[in-house]
Length: 476
Image (cartoon, rainbow, N blue to C red; front, top):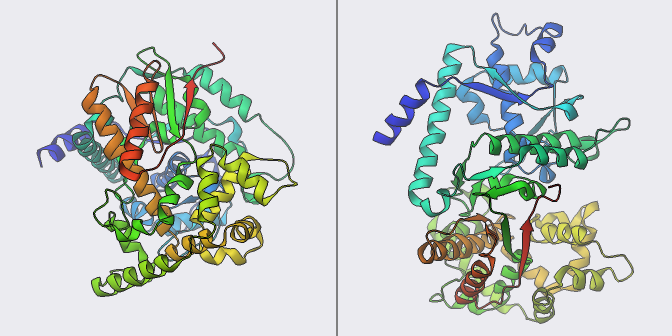
């Protein structure tokens, strides 16, 4: 309660702003298309939705949703109970677009700003003018501060390194972004071709750079899968080359093809039978809840247990034919190359395409196999039918179950084991977790690598192959 009071007091005295793309001119839009659906429309209600979509570019995966941002109705209602009237006005006059893709219990409709001049956009701040909206905005900021304090209290060994010593060369980072996303003219681009527009990707990068440069660090732990999210996990990989800690360059140690590696745990019957093992099928209660379809929530304990028993028995009966070959590919150090050679022997190797294929196989709905774009998934099924069948069984009731399980295994290893051990053994060593990797100051990467390998082996028995990437600004 004391913590909440302190955060609330700080928020009350704070001037608050909307952060939106500088090329968005809402006032000009409203002069051209006056809002007549209410007697006295509030411009801050419009800004709340625009900021939500703008910040969503930073927080959400643009590639996963063709650049559209899933809107949080609960958050919008916090500012305005009649937000749909304002939303419809923006939609009807083409200020924003929608994908019209709503999946009950899984996905809300996606929206994006129809920003023709977006490639020139920087981040601009607009003061919140309406008193009630300003108070709501301060309340939102205070709640975020409370959550940050809770994260700091539980994960201080991770959050304490987000301090003024963590710096970004914003000027060189933005120069690089301009080179990555040069302004283009002509043709239809972006979401209309079912991929994020360059302006959205560019703005996401600019937004992230500004947050870093302004020392506006944020972090949280996902209660769902246990991942630690921060400025570093959300920032574009290339931008990390411009980040230093206390003037020292950083080196990132990552587990190669971590998701396929962890998926090999599922190929062994012991994972479902040995409940005394450090990591097993029953280690993750939140995963077990996903073994029922979303429509069955809240779950009945009896039906959940019955489903688990049936699934485990089905998994035990699966023949291991083809499992060994899949494991050999994963453990070879050239997983994507070997997979490509086996499935597409006549096509030039493209690592990114193979990564996308594996992402689709592991995380897409079983029903996707019948869609026109499912050829890679079918190719994998034909090459490794029993591995595919196992993944299919786990996703039988809920397609998110497999992704959830693999990410839970990852966070168990990297957050609970590796990070905790580094903090205990070398409390003075700066390090940052980025899901399946850990960045540390140059000269300490070998120590971090040894801890990652040891903890993966201790918890799973697997041999993790590691990669090291120096974050180095090549423009200096």
